[in-house]
Length: 303
Image (cartoon, rainbow, N blue to C red; front, top):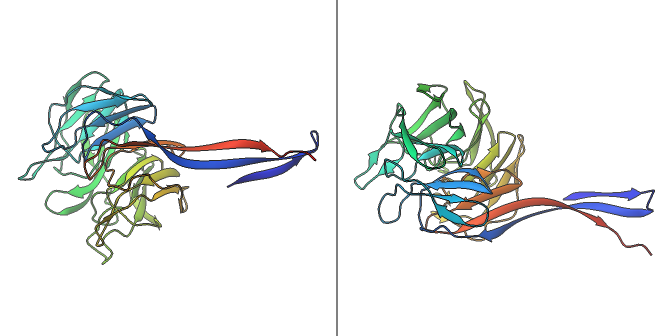
């Protein structure tokens, strides 16, 4: 992908070549699955998750390494999340076995966690969440049954909003509270359990959109409603993890460079379509991978 043109002043051909690739980042201090993620590629947060037990710990990433962050009040995995590294909101989740679906909401200020108002419907949804710590969106999930309800948070309370076009769980989210995007997920109907449906949210209602090239659940997602990215995931009924990465431009999905390690990346949903990071995963992992999209100007040699 790129452009080529002739520069009449310098009497040379020039081109802009776009490169897209994943590279290895520093591993997490503690290998986990089902973590929540927030922030950007150079200022990310990993929170909660599961080792052999449910975790309440968090780690902060600065683009080169991880350091220990604050400890949540409620240990859990598969929780929703959104915001920045120093203003992260987490909500819902799962503990067990036996399975207990959570309603707790907590806010991280870059140092410590504080309890916030609970979500209305206890559930987990593997890192799904959209928006900021004062304008959050949480949709779909599982609490013994697949869900399609949506809740909005305004910084002080949660309220119910639009219904997702299908019941689903383990889907990714991107965008904002008034311009959200849902991607992929596990859906018990139709027969294809991970058909890759995407849906857009306008602040009050959802609209079904195009499907991903590779349908999956448990994917890491980030970006905006019209410039989103999704990586990794889990495909059913084949029960296979995938390394596929796709970008969305508001109209269609395009495959790009694959992850180095196929896995369910869950809530690692930080950054943009040009600078994205995923971490942890299932099988339980400490891996961190960074996705970068860059343009290089090339000047052709003269005869």
